Length: 358
Image: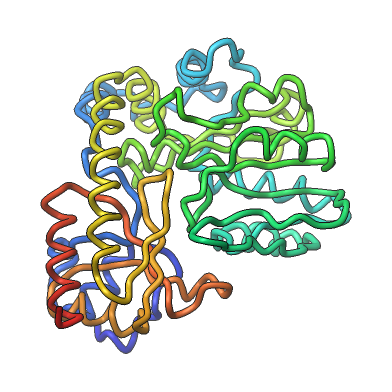
């Protein structure tokens, strides 16, 4: 298949497209475009798959009791009936989109993850974009007139990496009729640094939290996430969807990894150092300006057109970075890179120095 026959991807992680540009096998690509934990899947996940292969002969428990119990224990004192596992956070975003479409308007801070607009447009929601402002390297929600209806945002924010403090977000729970917060990258912060609104859910029936297990535990192929919201809302979602959205292996893996404290600590220890080193290294390259980030990825401003830079990295070094063309507010002078191991981060730095003739 020729490179010309493949459409430039709107998401990260499209190794087939990258390999067609680089002229190699997809397995030869060093992928900085998908923000996945480089240390996984953890051994606990692989062991759970092996131990539950025999369960493929039976349907999953439609109530996912073991998985919901494990999730509730990870967010004590949350009870299982406030939790709904899903086929990745993307599936649950679809049902959140249905609820947001019932609002007169839904506000969407931009730049925004592309699947938000997909889910909202699919149900013909009325969307009003709420542009973030950038000042001295920090992205913020711009103040404005009183807003009502729905609000969909993520925290930490993708693609900027900005972590919104609880004190910033909590007033929205009083202001908006429905608030959906995608916390797909919150796990990458140690518990004492997280700004999650999970424990506000029992107080505010208009709050929905979406979580992903695929990024932190490196299991995107299994598709696993969960929603936290009022049980009445989750029962309604359950009636809308297929009866077994999560397969037995994904459910077993989720139950296991949520108890894997060693893998969690290893990730937090690695990320703190690796992120700082990569920010410092990129900032030393003329024409590149990385933004501070609370997540496992960095948004980088580039004085050089990113599409050409992306192609050069693929053809010369078999390295894939995420262009930001799918974020109209950013365009061709921004790219996003995942934070990987120290050796892989250095390989990216060396490649950029060579391409930029430094």
